[in-house]
Length: 275
Length: 148
Image (cartoon, rainbow over all chains, first blue to last red; front, side, top):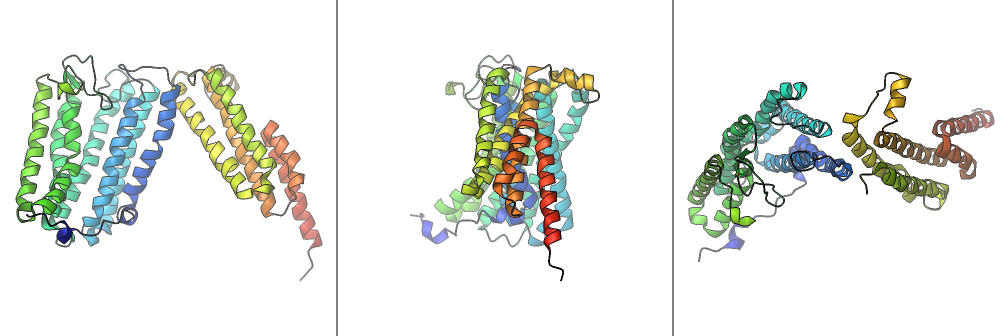
């Protein structure tokens, strides 16, 4: 048996380190979570409907998504070289990313206030003018994962088992590399759907009878969770082959994203049996 | 039910009164009362206010630039409710500040009760009354000071 859990188990990482490793990301994640309170209150008070659901659904989803993204970056920040983390360049870069994320959520809630579209808005002059700028901000905020992935890849002193370090770096890089083309195509598509959607999946809202480009976007964005989890599992279960397992897991995950992307482009729903 | 401004109004009054009652009995549990009247209830009212503005601001008439426009703003029921909740939240917050300041400056709680009533009913008038009371206590302290 290669199951030697005790031998490779290291102490649980200290979550409080996020506050000193990446103060801006940590504070932003907390603020995004607290921002859900007025958003849910607005949802409860609003009788308006936008494209079949409350106009507040979209800002709520982005507060969750960007909150999870920034808290994950704050967690991985401990694996950056210490000199980088404490340097001026890194602080300016995180400040720019935080600004981009704040701009995105303000834009989304502003659109919800007007009960109009945020993405794909070509009707309301102000929103039509701002949409390309928001695309640039979205690229900037996603680039944080690429930058962190490369820096962690090259860091000789992460203190992690090599396979876990590789999985964290690959996951971060894949988040950028997969999200950019998928979200870039999505932003130019004019709608999330390929075909006409009449039914949607519980919680996620993915179409049950049309292609939905958000599936691939969602999975691509979560490479930074999936690949590191695969890396941890590999180190625990097959330590001798861990590096190879990480590469295979990353390859399979990229293939899954490409599969769901092509599936959506063909107008087919993702896992239609889900309901 | 929450989507109807008239029913939502019915909920806001009792909530604010709960905070004011707590302030009246503040000397019994000063820290608990401060947490309720300076933080919890104003925060809850502020969530309601923020949600009302988020939902209704885009189709509100009027504006801030003339009295006529402000009056037009208040013809919209949900925006008028937001304005009312604004009074409730900030008046209570000021009431809690009065209570806390009086305690720190050793002004008898019974003396601030009229200030609290005034703040509850006519916000700034109560603040003015407490400011006068505070000035009087400060003047007395200076007059009774033993010269060093």
